[in-house]
Image (cartoon, rainbow, N blue to C red; front, side):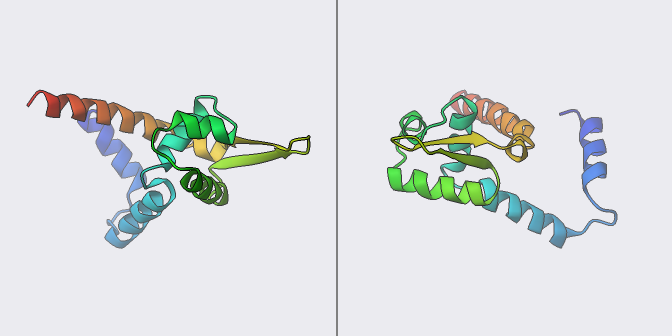
Length: 125
């Protein structure tokens, strides 16, 4: 991001005068909702078309069934995903990302961009 662009964005988001307590609280809220080892990979999996529990589980190496179940419940409570139950035999459960989840898509893309750049920087040092 260019310096001018960053300044404009900061001016738009941050209060004047700066309120550090408010800023820290906002960061903590964000980290609480999307932080941890599994939430972003789960969102990525769902956004890549995996809708069923087992599809999501298989697409994320190392995640346990119990952890995926726990994270999906928490993400549903935070309105990041929508759980749809279709009363067929057997019952079909699908997970989709909510519009609210899409609201931080740009943040995720920037995180992926930064992560790739960081890995390259460390690899080449």
